[in-house]
Image 1 (cartoon, helix red, strand yellow):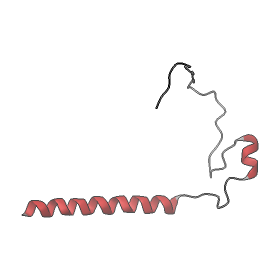
Image 2 (tube, helix red, strand yellow):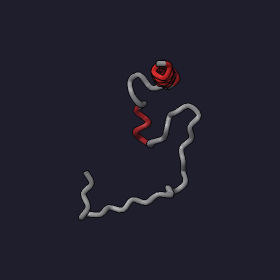
Image 3 (tube, helix red, strand yellow):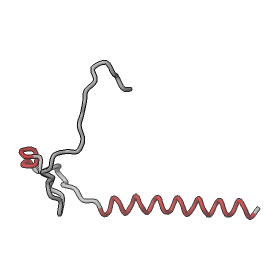
Image 4 (cartoon, helix red, strand yellow):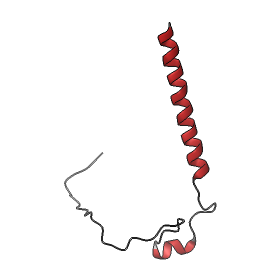
Length: 71
């Protein structure tokens, strides 16, 4: 019988932790209430607090394969 109680307590702790993470994530996130500023579309510069645009070349390459379909 004590084993079921331990599992129940661990489930409660896990659920509580998950709920706190979700609540804090929503509380700490910020966004523009009416969407991105219009000038953000002009130059695609991030408007996040403290963020700076990366001007280096991307280390990734994208290669399209015409005979391959991913589902």
